Length: 301
Picture 1 (cartoon, one colour):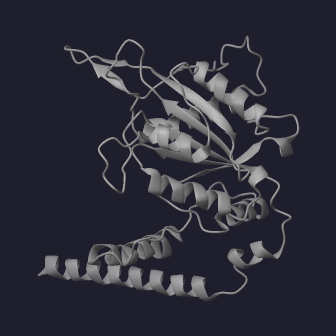
Picture 2 (cartoon, rainbow, N blue to C red; picture 1 turned 60 degrees about the horizontal axis):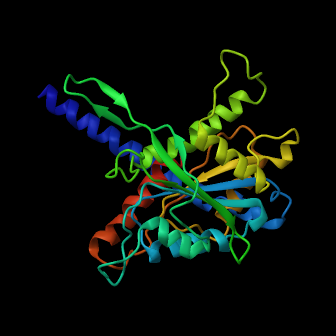
C-alpha cells in the first residue's frame, strides 16, 4: 500500500511539472517584444563574422542543394558568413533517381559550389579520434589526411570544404572517422589557435598545429576570415553548427548574432528544429509533436 501511494505521488508530481512547463511555454510564446521581433528593426548587429559548419557523410545532390541555398539565402550579409563543409571520407551520396554510378559527396560538393578537384591536389596530415585495436587489446590512435578547397560561389557565398581522404599506405581507408571526429577536427583547431594567441612558440604549453590545421588557418586568413587578429572586429566571432540535411530559416543567423551581441553573458544558443516533411506519413506527423515538446518544453528552460 505504501509503495502504491509513493508511485501515485511521483506520477502526480511529474504531471504537475509537465503542466507548469506547458503554462510557462504558453507565457513565453505569448509575451511581447521577443528577440525575433527586435532583430528585424535594424542592421546594426550584422558586422560579426560567422562560420556555418556542416559535417556531411553520404548526402546527395538534393539535400546538399537545399542546405547550401538556405545558407546563401539567409538574410545575414554573404560577405560576413562562410559555409564550411567537412566531408567525412569519399562516400557515395544518395541520389533521387538511384542511378548506379552516382558521385561521392565530395564530388557533388565540387559541382554545387563550383570548384575543381584532381588527384594531384595537396593532401595534409591531421589527427583523428579513430583507434586501431591490437591483439592484446592495446589501442593505437590512427591519423588521417585531408584536402582543402575554398573560394566564393557565383552568388557571392564564401565556402570551404575539408575532405578527409584516409591514410596513404592503406588503399581501403577512405578517411571516414564519424561526425564526432569532424566536429573535433574544427574545435581542436579553434582550441589550439585561441590558446596560442598570446603565447610564445618556445613555451612548453604551446600547442603545435598539425599540417591540416596550419592549412585551414592560412586559407581562412586569405579569405578574410582570420581566427585571430589584433583587431577584434576582423576575426571570426561566432560558429554555427547544423546537419547536412537541415535548412536554415531566412533570419536564423541574424537572430543568433543579435541575441549574442545584445546579451554578452550568453555562451551558446540552440535553434528550434522543425520537421520539413511532416505531411509524408504518420511517423513524420508524430515527429512534429516530439520536436515541439523537446524545444518548447525542455530546451526553452
